[in-house]
Structure formats: structure tokens, C-alpha cells
Length: 319
Image 1 (cartoon, rainbow, N blue to C red):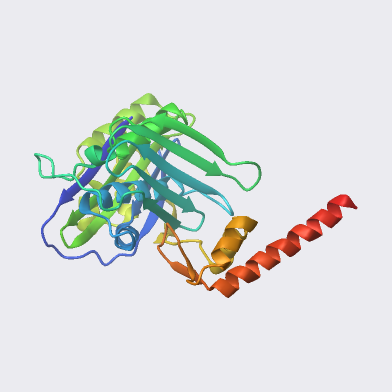
Image 2 (image 1 turned 30 degrees about the vertical axis):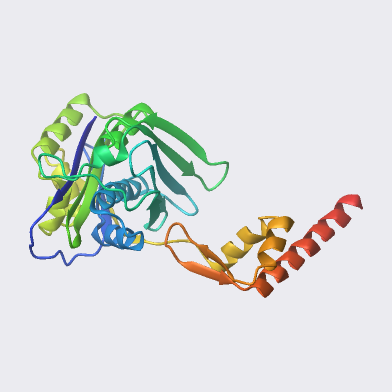
């Protein structure tokens, strides 16, 4: 198990023209799986939507990148959700990945901040603190499954590697990084390398030696390397081959229809109270910060619709 986190201030350099995406690689006779991702734009978008402080943006960006890496093989309605519950100033972080490269999430305390470390880096471990990493997997059929491990350091990458080794029983090398300066996110990305059945222990040693001598993943992204180039570099010496590529983007699934159903689910008393107010009811999505406004008349209509639906169900039950 090895992790490699990076979140450090950076000077001005040329921007990376490549779009966000990921690449998958198999190596060592298909017994080692490597996924590398570039997440610069989605991390920047998510951080701006939530008005994150620089240190929260670093922590949040690492978790979003981790979700993208762990969700690389999702299909259909499958999802993977990473949730950090912690006692640090950020209080908690959530990142969710769906099939097709749709990534979303939010921090509980986006404006929390900590001073830079003595090395001049963002104090991600300090802003996260102690707690747990919960990973929920939602499958095409059956109930979602959640497992959790304690945070090792709060640095995200090390915590993800520990989860893979302890909960999934998969030896893993994880690297996630966010490069930023006061103007915003300059580069973000990472990679994960995992041993598959039949892998040799010496292959993990090769991976660890390779990663130990590689620059931070965010620095590689900033230099212009594409995800497939990073994945091939991680697998150097193990005969890597590219198996797939995919786009990544920040995408929320909220809609007015979903918010309407949520309001109906509040119950008769709450709907009646909202309908009697003189001011509109505003609902803000905690993921993308989109605002949905319902007039008192619209709320009263929802109340009537909920009453009608309940009356129909009562008739069917009694019949």
C-alpha cells in the first residue's frame, strides 16, 4: 500500500489544453490494473460552485479525483460514493461517481481554512482531521453496499489506499493531487494501481519504486501529460497496454421534478405551513447550488396533490 498526495501552491505556467478524462491500463500479463485521471476542470468547477477556500478545494479535489478513479469501471446505473466524516474544520466531504464519467460532490464547510504547512503546502490532513472513509457502491440490482475504514492521515490518497487494502482486500498504490494558487485550480488528477488475482508481490514492489520516483500527479498534469501517458508511466517495466479511455465532467442529477417529489415527501403539516407563507419557498441543491423556487400557490397545489394521492392509496388498501 502506498499513497502519494499533492496539494501545493504553484507559480504561473502554461495551461494544459487537454480536456478532463481518464485512461485504463492493464500490465504484468493483465494482473495489474492502472487508472489515471485528469480532473482539473471538474475540480475547478466544483470548487467555484461551493466557493471553497484553497485548502478545502485541495481536499475536495482529491476526493473527487478518487471517486473518478474508483468509478472508472462503472456501468449502467451503478454508482460509487465516497464520504468522509471527520472532526476537522471541513466537517465532512462527499464525492460521487456514476457511469459515463459524471462526478459530483460537496464539502460540508467549504469556507473552512488552515494555514499552510511549514513546507508551504495546503494542510489537507489538518482540515480533515480524524474520522472515517465510507464507500457506498450502488449496483444495477440489489441494495447499495457500504463499508468504512478509519482515516489514516486525512490526506485522502493514503486513506483511499488503506481502504482498498483493508476493506476491498486489494493491494493498491493511490496518488491524488491538486495544484493551486490564490487564483484557483491549476491542475488536478491522480492514479490508482491495483494488483489483480494472479499478480506477483514483486510487481507491487516495482509499482511502489516507480511511483516513489515520479513527480506529483498534479505536476504531471500541469506539464501537459495526458491520463494515458501517466498510466503507462506508472506501469513502466510491467508491459502496460491501454484498455480504455473516458471523459470526465462535474454533473449534478438534481431537477425541478426531483425537488418537487422531495417537497411532497415532507408531509401534510410541513406542506401546509409552507403554503400559508407569503414568501416563496426556495430549495438549494447541496451539490450544484442550483436554486429552485416554488410560489405559495405551487406549494398549496402540491399539498392538494399529496392529499389526493393519499386518498387513492387509502381506498385501494381498504378495498
